[in-house]
Length: 482
Image (cartoon, rainbow, N blue to C red; front, top):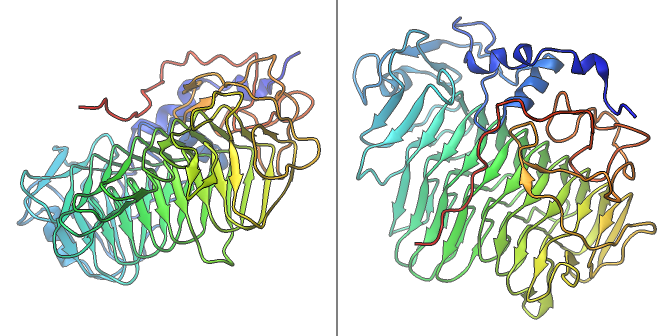
């Protein structure tokens, strides 16, 4: 049976990816086209197919930086200094260099500011050796926009207070679009914490078509570390993004290898993979009691911790069309309570729909004996069309409970990693698709429903879809132990 849309399949691949390598528009006031990071190519095509580009054009002055100098006329630092709140600071379309090496942190206080490069693979901002005050620090009360950039190598070391944001610090909201945040470190020295190895925001952190990978939040003197990739006080909103191979590490305790959020989160069409912490290897989500989090069309895989390898979600949580597998909880216990290798929920009401939670490891048990889903006392779960094995929480009637190991994490024709289904898996044609969900996690052209009904999980099996498109890239992973 042909399980795909032939009209979509006839579109030439070149037409889908042509705009992805062109960078933003050279016009100062015109709309910028999408340029993906290594984690976003098929999702960028989906955005183009929908007619949106996720870029908010400023109404104030556009200022250009024309060289890669640290300071002086034509530099990024000079353009930022000359800008007023609401201005947009952009790389000149004729910029011939690709890397700006800052000799000190770029610190500014405008209420709102927009900073753009020519593309994540064309404009990199990094720090010179010995710079230990971070990379970009926004002290304003509004929003910092970072677009079409790679930020790399920032280090925030503090021995007198918390170390916040190795590459990006925002006193309030931080919005990251079509960018990459990588190899940044927030280190608390002595009796200080390290928060947000890649990004720290006092408000909401928004990720669009972006990658946060290979960052570290650490504390060396017995205090905690949190948010290896991102630490957000006001919540995390991630769309078509990858959070991978980040670490929160401490001699005491650490939470949220991928990210920690003290506000509600919304995660859509994204991947949280290969992160590590002592607690909540993938993410630690603890919003106010009345704030609900949603996770849709997302893969959580390969994360590890002593307690809860995948996600800890303390507030009300709704998960749909997602796959949580191959995460590891080494101890399988937290304060004497059994915790799952994949997901741990707080007390209160939660819903899980058309989602796979199996194949995780907890404690010394094997795949068949591991707890995948756990919850605090008082938790209640609703939902349907799920595949959940090994749960301490009562499951909705009709839930598939077969313990099984999924296919390996792979790119599967896109740049956002997923676990493919086999034709013999019980999840095929056994799920449901929320209203308005046209594509699976990988985005266009991978349809959400192929066949009689949607598959369970973030991946939709289409036997007629070939993956050998030549645009696969490596999935960021944790480095081997030294």
